[in-house]
Length: 169
Image 1 (tube, one colour):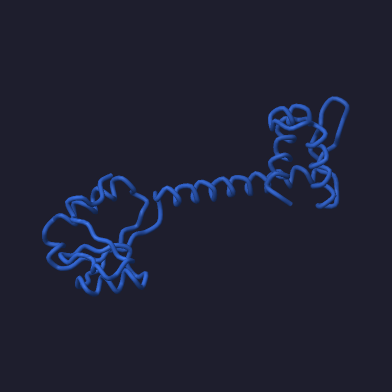
Image 2 (cartoon, one colour):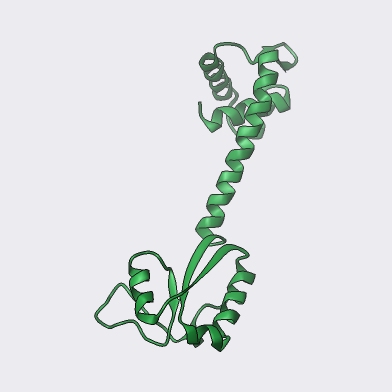
């Protein structure tokens, strides 16, 4: 069973017929009918009473409709969550800070700006000395670090930039 089968089923149920559902879904009616027959075959029974004028749900179809709508709603929520994560709107970022950076106020201002732009991203601060930050970033335990030391030239996996050119929402 695929989400397409559920979408087709719900459309037929809501439209009360295969022709109207096919128009709504932008598919040809024979394809839609075949997909519904495949779904009914997979489930082992009829989901619709097919009349001359109207297609109605069977009791099994009524029960299936409730669950199909829930599955489709959850699939939509999953897709939205995936898109948000891909845009960087959700997730978490782990930031290493050295003592002096915390007290300068610059880090707090940058974190506030980032949080305003992406309020669903969880921010985790971890105090770490500059040299420790490098190791933690390379091991995957930190995502970014604030320190007075630039990235070492002999480590191509690290890059640094002055804080004045850092993140701007």
